Length: 219
Image (cartoon, rainbow, N blue to C red):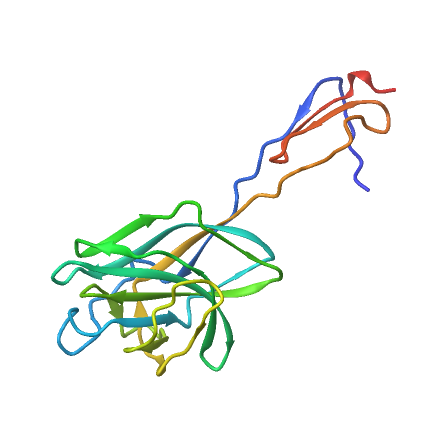
């Protein structure tokens, strides 16, 4: 049990903690990311890549996908990237837990796209991997130095929804793609509480966990 001692009469309150944020993937500002897939530049085949190294381990809970950052070549225009979050099911095979929509790449360079209203839930502590599918002329830059590794496929099926299995024809290649997904844990919500303490003090708890404790009416 927790004992709360009040030295003087008055009203006690608390601050709401800031939700924890995480990044899966190396991010768009990855140093040394100057290379592109394909022998003939970004207009070559579409590509599917999963970052083997820059994963993030999350506790059970519900998480919002807040943004993605990437460094891409727009090619001749009209291309896009699609962000992916997945869990490993073994031997370089993954199951998607969240797949974003197509994000148009209209200019080359480092850029960030805000994501709203997108979330996923995990029931236990889980290692989360980020991936990216780029197509129609757009290509995400990668670095081939620094000890990174990615699972890569030059003709893979484009993931479109959670719960899909993703395989790779070229696993564990020495590349790190300049791409990352920002994740924020949703705060817990208080749905019920005792409005009066054991000694008669008034307690008010808000849904976000902030509270006030007024001992003036206690015994």
